[in-house]
Image (cartoon, rainbow, N blue to C red; front, top):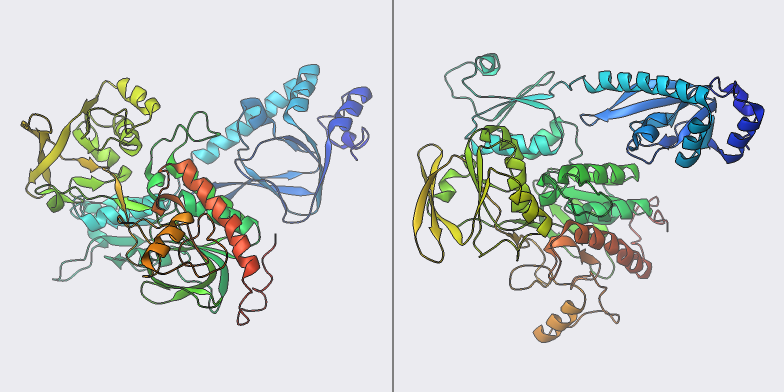
Length: 573
């Protein structure tokens, strides 16, 4: 229990009259930490702390690395900066040795500084110093881990730069004819293979695969050998990340498999403003980064840059087998299919010729700086197209949104429609479709037809972004896993109805769970599921729900006797 006497060891509080210290002590929580235990994670809700004994390390993450900012010793206090700025905790705090702290919640802290002029002056002075220290930390730009040499109009180079950016890897990009590239290019008569990735202390990689890059950067690309996971999640979009967080937090040995980067299509959204709990909005990248850090904190593993080639369902309770590209496979008692969808291709004359050379699917935020002062076009009428238009309006001279329908109201949220109306350089053309694309080495112009009149117009542009809906990529799934006519995975009651019609009844006495597919123990969540609502929040909801059903499935399915002893019984409720 915190007492008025124990607070005398805090220089800030020692001059405070005893009756006030008694009041503070009566409202303070007595927090005790073991060595290595976290007190706060960066981004958590803040409190005011006084360190009575022990020492604490203060750290911040930057460029996917953790940096020590300072160390707190007995007698120090902290937490006033985010409380006075009404923000989340600006750094993580972990015990270097057993420690004891007094903690005041936000309301008690504000009452404390309002009631004592001396404390208020001291706290404001320390706040200014801490903000100065944080500014110095923020000004330390992370050194690029890799230099990418390749042409802007090389599709492979575009894809590599996008892969690095979405995985938060700092890099520098040089054109092959840039004088700074010369020293990195191999000598000899043969033309170098691009993109060429140059590292500070390792040999360069020429035209590498995502897997080559991920391995070089220290990402996990191989599953644990001879191991059976409780749940393997295929895809790390909102649904997959939610399943990862809830699975790992509830004690399941959890593995996520992602072929590109956490976040899926939602990860490229520049601003999501209708997500619950974020009144000012947040980017899709920020949301996915937070979710992945959260999943890792609970012990989830992620295989990066690996694609699932096929799935072999387990028989009679045996684990399901996930076959990976190249070599390797994953054994898991339950699976969650959260592969999402891929952007639908625009079937118009010449468009395919300029993919990555002026024609891009999705927001392609790595190309934002190249649109400065230019006229760019976006095809699509949904929220993704609206968010991309708002983003590119900050760079391009003019952004034209080409919409097939008569208006945006049937396909786009009203808040986005209202925001687009405030942008003077955003123009919406309804009843319009792209029918052709022209150019030489890169996109030079597009032909747009009016769906009602048939009139065609040609517009000069070097950037066309296509966001016209998406298709499910489910061809690699088992043949007995039922999909609808468009390839979306059926679950729950739909499975029973369709299997009965096909003459292949559901094999168990119980009905399939709400998110369970036609193969027991394989679940689907998010956009890949038939009948899903294509929104980030619904994907998160389905991902978290899938874990509840997996618990039921695992309870009724005995663990395989061949599983390692440390795996059996590892699941905690």
